[in-house]
Image (cartoon, rainbow, N blue to C red):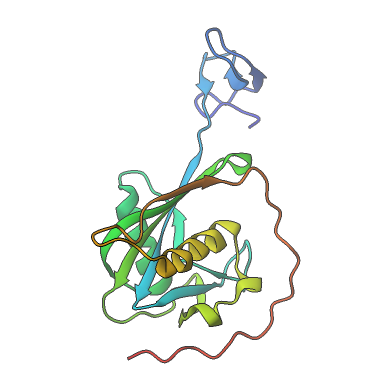
Length: 199
């Protein structure tokens, strides 16, 4: 940040009185510009043991596979944001939604919140997706996943599905974690496996 969004004057980095970290300060109008993490909300859409993935049509990671997810907007809950992103990217609606993974990425100031849910009806690629497909575990394009948060969420799901549980136990409970640092590997995108037939 170079200039104050309130008055247009140059800003400087300093620790305000009573604070413990650097902030952008405007000496002209006295505004302290706080910068906070952004929430990425999305879903893990399911039909039986298959998951719906979207192949990205935008940067970053254009051409790689992901779960439908994106930045939360003002005025919506995290669940509303996850549902909206799923409609926008995969043309899909979900039922039985519950929070499944909560992953902190402090180095890029993001928090991922992925909800698990059941697909209800049809799906189709939105403007930010090249294509959308259902995948069984054996067909997941692990080397072509866009982000580590997506890989971790998928691995939790398939691990949870295999666990033997006592009667009445919750199969898909909340997973919490973080990535301190991650850099996208330069993996060439290969042709994807044939889609699993739906219906």
